[in-house]
Figure 1 (cartoon, chains in turn red, blue):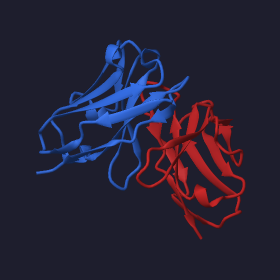
Figure 2: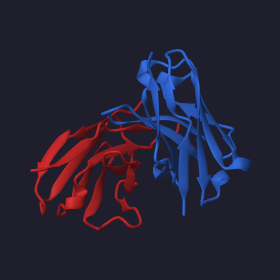
Figure 3: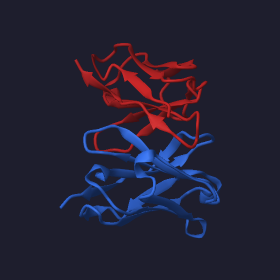
Length: 108
Length: 118
């Protein structure tokens, strides 16, 4: 199975900061990577798919990049609504889907 | 509007059984792969199982193979998860999720909590 490792696990930042979260795959997954945002008590929300494609309705301050084994999610200017936990997910193989451990973005 | 509504969660003793349901609306259910994803209290997301549009193919995470069974009824626009031989480590919120054009999840239900405890 493909393991997904996110870093950092927790990130403290201020409104207006540029934030970058990294996700590494244990083997190449091409661009088959998605990013989700989850707030406490809520279901995850899709932000990015195919590593860099922005889901409809998601603000343009969110962007994704990378391919192969290393990927990043960037928030260009952190907004109050962005304090949440973010997960990456690989879908290189539909028979074994895996998520990263999550990155909690906290208020500094 | 796409909606996924889970039901069937609750408290069950170790070794017991439970059946979760997910009612889908707002899209052509029979055209999409569907999945169950779970989240233990305070933990991250874990994909549990998925099922092909016609139910002919099913996949599971290793930790649930032989105990949990995914199924669907396209006539009823419903997804199911039969959970047998439940263990404490199965305690989680279980989400029903639709697979987009590939196997990422573009819509999620609100989740249903399963607690396995004596």
